[in-house]
Image (cartoon, rainbow, N blue to C red; front, side, top):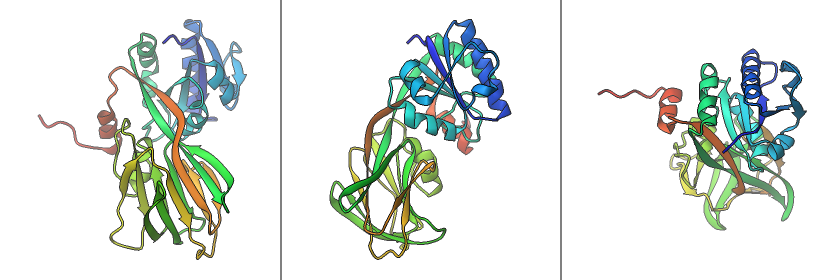
Amino acid sequence: MPYNTVGLIGKAAHEGAHVSLNALADYLRAKQCTILVEENVAQEMEGDDFTVCDLVTIGKQADLAVVVGGDGNMLGAARVLSRFNIHVVGVNRGNLGFLTDIHPDEVIQQMDLIYNGETMVEQRFLLEVEVYRHEQLKSNNSAVNEVVLHHGKVAHMTEFEVFIDDQFVFSQRSDGLIVATPTGSTAYSLSGGGPILMPHLDALTLVPMFPHTLSSRPIVVDSNSTISMRVSKANADSVQVSCDSHIVLPALPGDEIRVRKSNDRLSLVHPAGYSYFNVLRKKLGWGSKLF
């Protein structure tokens, strides 16, 4: 796929991201590409031969978006860009970098592979979450990694019930519940003891957070299921629903939170030689081959 119009998105006020963004801009100028720069980092760019715009405009007009930063920057961009027919690639200027897999020292070499067509494009699905009160929709949003039901206060338990496709599964007193995509299985869900899911699996994982029972365990379900979390009226305080730890939706006792697969897809571009297991070995410190 030819990438004639490219959007540059990055971590603002970050020296390393500043260096990578300008190196990318020089590379794209040599390719005679139209360059769109996300407004939050435009002031850090050298030259003036680019158009400053927002994420929605990049999604509508660009063929490729390059996100320079950490996974948090990628998550924020992905929730918007997934609504459009655009490919997305990440340059890691953060910590772990599960989604931003190009090393800063290899930007030019990896971009050459991408422009030579030596890539794989991977579709990642998102989640849609809706909060209902008395059967009326109060708020909604989307998540790439996970949707988390949790108490607004630290170390406070919440009572809730979980239904899958309107079938009762369990009731629970715990700090909350993580509903994660395969993409998010290596994020907060992993810290909570959840399983790692390969990205192409059509599944979700439900991970209880500090449940008040020894028999509660993570469960993997079909991603086409509708997950319903019904907050008990016995709770004295309000709870919260977090999307990728970026967006918080308030919920009250008696509210119902519905989570389902979104129709949107994130099209992640990986340069040739990408291996998910290689990423896991590097990021999680797994052992290498012995022989």
